[in-house]
Length: 297
Image (cartoon, rainbow, N blue to C red; front, top):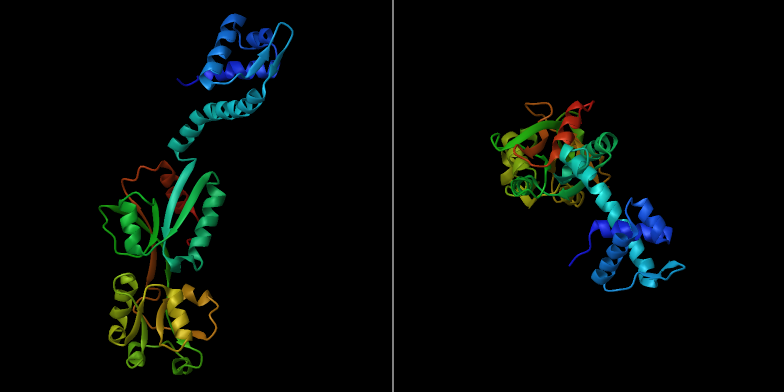
């Protein structure tokens, strides 16, 4: 049998007043039912909590320990309804965010700063994963919001363009492409060994690069999924790599960058992504805040 909140409140009053009469008056009840509450509580707990005689009431050692826990439980009971209302309204809660590694090179930090300022009571749980993993996690309700690459199923997912940037070619220091004095084109890269994006784990970048430099996949000497790994391989002289412009912020010794001429000035897209039927109220608050945020990320 469990004790009740009413019994806890009776015990708290007696423990603080150290007098049954004053405690009963404080609780607006008579003394006999209060005494019965304490007796029932002690039977349920299985320990004597109060020492009482005709002259005084005192806490036992067990009572001292139980008092601290009783206060904590009553505090939780008093605040739980309000917290539940806040979570239901979206002003409190947790939003789990999946993000690609490349989004950490500036965009993710700015987004988190905006959320901390605008929604300080919403917790943010971060999980690094490629776009394919984010889509699966969103569908399985393991994350609420993604920072991912297109395309997406518009019937299932809501999305919003978050950031655009140029596509650069990462090359070893002293590479001949740096001497051209202009943006490089596909013909300049026809014979270059390429550290290429994985066609399975980095499909977006793989398709984007192949659409602009068809020879890239045939010239691949390595297939990897993370931009940072690509840059280390470039620094080691293993080949060139195609990376988003934000990757140039990474201080990798031995790597320089040259811009790739592309049909669209900034072809690399990063989107916010969420399931349209999400049941997390806090997600809507996050999306509304980010929609209003200026400047764009």
